[in-house]
Length: 283
Ligand SMILES: NC(=O)c1ccc[n+]([C@@H]2O[C@H](COP(=O)([O-])OP(=O)(O)OC[C@H]3O[C@@H](n4cnc5c(N)ncnc54)[C@H](O)[C@@H]3O)[C@@H](O)[C@H]2O)c1
Image (cartoon, rainbow, N blue to C red; front, top):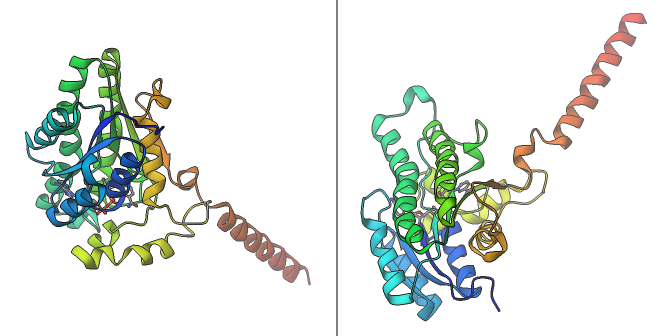
């Protein structure tokens, strides 16, 4: 028995990273998955790997009407729609707000905020009519606190958290749940993409990211796509039927604040300096 037996899911940004691992785990838990992405080669390869329980559809989440193609396939080929995971994303603009271009800003808002809006709307139109469903949006720790990512990306993720709450409040009355997952640092190609890498080169940056993120949070390892997939399984499954409108940080404790091990080291060093200075003045 899988946690998602006989459930039908649509996942965006599912050709890579968090979305791809979630597609694998969803199928392992008994779901069918429609994989949506712009990266046709990787999306089709993943659908082939997952066999008869998966299909790939080219979806640009910024285009009105695009995700409906995947939803229709889920309903007509697989037999229904129970979960939509709005997960597609790009790294956003990096650098000072003084240098963010209007094109870059618009693109980030379109991929993240507009993409999630279109996904919620399309899923909601089906799920409200049937009286059930789970919509999961990928936000970020960057939407909870400043300085984990660039300006436009952080603002878009904060707005996704809020849109999750407003949608959850309305759609909950029809039996449709809407929740957000806020990943911390997760080893995926998104950081390679932020550095300007593409395709296989971006995928090759995962191991480096895993190493460099290993000391960022109280839990001393990098986050992995499977950590987010597990949260998505919970939110998509019947184990969470009373969970609605939440932002679930999956971040190893990153958003609890400054690292204890660093602040204690600074405190010890600072106190030792004060003591030494006073003793030297007395001598
Ligand atoms: N990796 C992290 O540390 C982290 C942290 C917080 C949030 N996130 C979020 O997690 C989500 C998944 O990112 P990831 O880390 O797996 O990165 P990733 O780069 O591995 O995957 C993102 C996928 O989204 C696809 N995509 C981009 N624009 C699209 C569009 N317009 N339409 C459809 N697909 C599109 C890409 O082709 C790619 O396959 C994103 O929303 C990202 O912002 C990631």
